[in-house]
Length: 136
Image 1 (cartoon, rainbow, N blue to C red):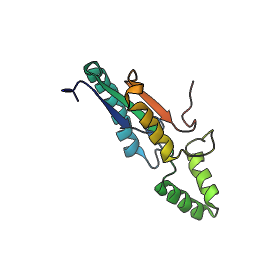
Image 2: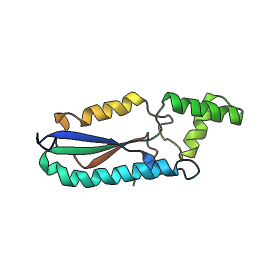
Image 3: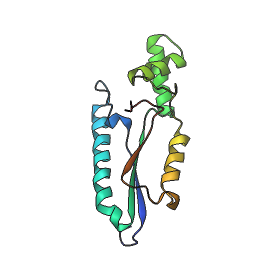
Image 4: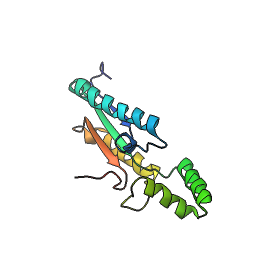
């Protein structure tokens, strides 16, 4: 990319980098926070060489694995799948939209950020979490 003088690096971080769940995701959260910091650093280093660096920070995404987790939590709590999803949302402090994001929504954000139509965007992080991370 440096030789060509153009390119885009997209790091997929996580809201866990700023909102870890100490009882279950400390190592994952630390790795994602480190990736975010690394992305900030290299954006300053290589953006002047024509290489953009952006970070996408998803919250809870409705993947097959997360649905299985919701099902396991529901079974343990003696409730249904919606009850299992509520357990996860409560652990995250709530999701104002009331649902996890779909993988396609995250992909659409990345698809917007990667091409030249976003050529002035670099060094930033986009959170896609249904409002989970509180904003000021």
